[in-house]
Amino acid sequence: AANFSLFIKNRNLLDVANARVSQIDQTLRTLKLIDREDIEQYDTNAHESLVSAKAAHESAQTSLSRLDNPAVTAQSLKNSFDHLSRAYDSFFKVSEAVKKILPL
Image (cartoon, rainbow, N blue to C red; front, side, top):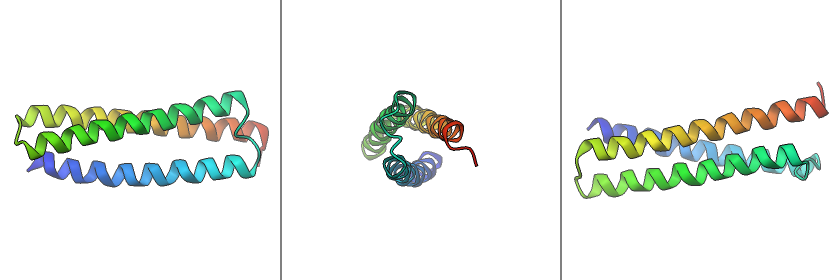
């Protein structure tokens, strides 16, 4: 039951993170900053982390549907949360890099 609850929370966090990266990408294109090497690398890292988070989430979903050992599901969820954390770290790095270019 705990893993299922974490699975749902993880799905919601993935949805929010995907929306956030789309907003960031749109803003970077609008400001014509997407091609700056540092910003582009942080953005790429965010996208890669989200792909990994989604893969780990799908692994947890498979594990839940097969009624695998709860520890297996928990590890997949932990991996997904870890990748989400890395994505948000990249979001913050993009923000800091943009602030250096366009201080408010």
